[in-house]
Length: 302
Image 1 (cartoon, rainbow, N blue to C red):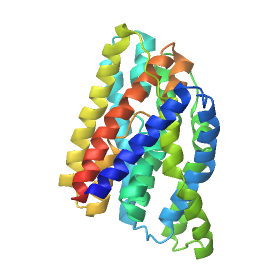
Image 2: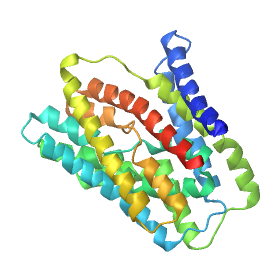
Image 3: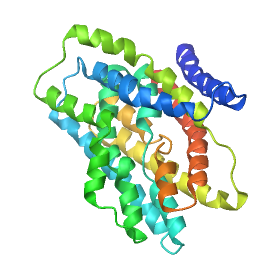
């Protein structure tokens, strides 16, 4: 149990270091953009490839893709329902920030360190469904609700321009066909992928934003209450009421407590003036998710 806590607090320590480096000018918040590109295009795909290396994907596990998608659709619908009588900017805020899980930057590094290759693959399958919404689906839905048409073509273009998503799809197809990459390739990807947790947590620290107008706190709290309230329900259902293997149920119980997607502020700012509120919501959700996921993983390892 002590080793588990040390790992968990190591993640927290790296996040704090990232924030302090930005706070005291050693690094700029803009530097996180370069690190994000390295993570999304190199270390994250390498970690995913390594996770898939020796895992035989069963057809029954494809349900995880559907689960990731359905969880997001339910949260998107709930966000719309809560804000249905509010102004357009508030509708956009709720619809984009209620769904969407930060899997690649946050949850996957945790799973990579605690739950091993099976956990990585299960998380990737969940994220494949999640990505449909958080990489553009929620933005399209919110835009259409307020009368801005974006079209499905742009949504699919954005979705398949994401290298991690493309890697998910290609590796899933390859695994279902019984094909695995050579061992020498996996040695290389494992070295690169091992850097993913550190880079991901450092980026989160550099992107933390703590400033917000107090009048907007109510909406922030409502969105977070919706996300984590639904997360508690989802986690209980998946862990206690599904016939999936224990490792898969553990992954699902953790994944639904992931923080707000890192893309949410960008999409929110495209349709409203609440981009900074979205950024604050995401930052606050990171602290909450750290506490919840660390606690869950500690209990799972006992």
